Length: 377
Image (cartoon, rainbow, N blue to C red; front, side, top):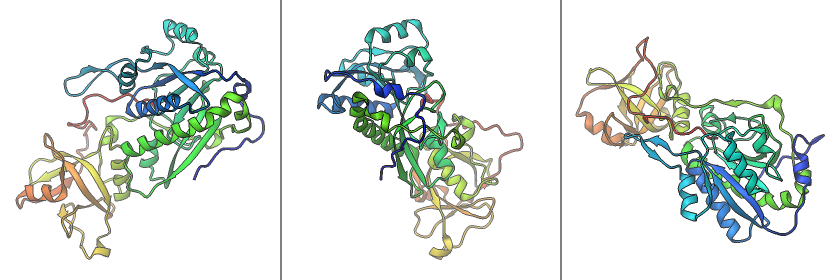
């Protein structure tokens, strides 16, 4: 169910944006975004525009981060948003920074009525924010003021929260701190992984934004805005390759499982396994769940030994605190992903154990992506 914020006290800092009204002519929107989830938001906006939704608007231009090198060969690659904009024949701007004079001059020439951001990934200066007549709306995948910053959904899942969500808020100079126009909770059952859930939240957030647009155009959104409670704000720190390492001697099964869910997109998660007494290797964990062997009559493995669960659907690992982690899918270095049964068969009777990190070990996964994707949220 939707949880819409309601105004309390003096609306600040952008109520004046909702007091501007216009004629029935189509409003001009500039969209800013970069990754695939943002491309999906743009696609929904374009579809709504073509059908006369959102109170009548057109996407006059699209802004995305410039092509970046990615993949094993570090090939220069256009963002998904750039690819979609070019395919639809929409004017595209790819400034290295939203502070560039040429970019701001062109944006001023476009005379946008509203800017919409979805995982753009660049700081927006005050000069930018002053240009669109109705302001700038942002789709943010958290229940603001919770998880302001670069990785809101990842940090929400990592923390094991029971509820995620999406917010539509006006953008102000302070990061993710503008007044809320729409917000909706998304209850979690505990097995959601970040990539599909992030897409779901951006789709839903874009729908909420489209639903709110008529109130932006006619000025009635002033009665719907609610300032964020800064005292409740939490930060969602940017991800790094160091987040990928699972030191099972230091984690509970719940903590390890939540990291696997949270970092399933990037940087992934890995731990050390010794097979047949050999030097430990880094094994990437793709899908896990919390184990309850007592309920299934399946005794946990001894010590750090890896065992195949009854039925063969999971590998059992006992973490440092004695809790049980079940691994459903994993990847050995240089190999394709396999399920638990395939991994077990590949052991050919050899013993597998998880290993502690060496005291001076650096957290840098061997088979993670060569470079980090944009951190645009």
